[in-house]
Image (tube, rainbow, N blue to C red):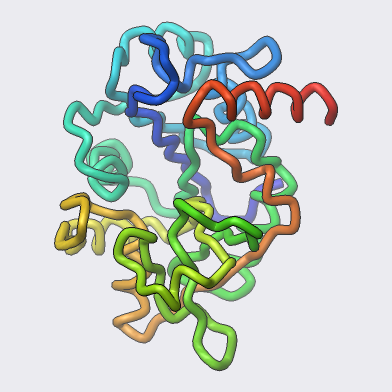
Length: 247
């Protein structure tokens, strides 16, 4: 399934999930018989990842316990300062790793091996420093938007809170799932700033930094946007369970 380059998968899973109306860490809510994060770990294994690194925070001991049978290396993000900050916590663990790094999420459990294998192959075929998974949504509210240039290449990623009205009208969204060359990711992460409406360190800014260097960022757009849906509240959890049962 995997490319010739070694693959490490970072799974972002530090948040509590304030809208879940539950004290259980969001990523431990089950889809089918398994916690969401366990599904994501199993997908990473099927993909052929040699390193799987969940980034944990809220009630991390519970999540570690749920993953104790899995071949993972847990890293902690005890301050929630954004997605770029979360990935930066993995730098020491991966300091000797040379290959592709795939970013996944503990609350996006239905992403498929097939979709991720395609993303990795596009990344390798185009020899890009970073590759982003996108989708068109009829209601893109809440997602970062993908801004393309006249040639259809990535121009920039803009968070919705920082987007203009014109940019918000764009329906192609950033799924938040990326592949990076390892050295690119960890060289650029410390350069990400937090000068935005949330004062957070956003991972998509790594892509913007690559573009500023006139380097290649590839795009893979998927048709089945349900694969990239995250779970943020009980209604979405119920909807995802229903979708899973009907797959």
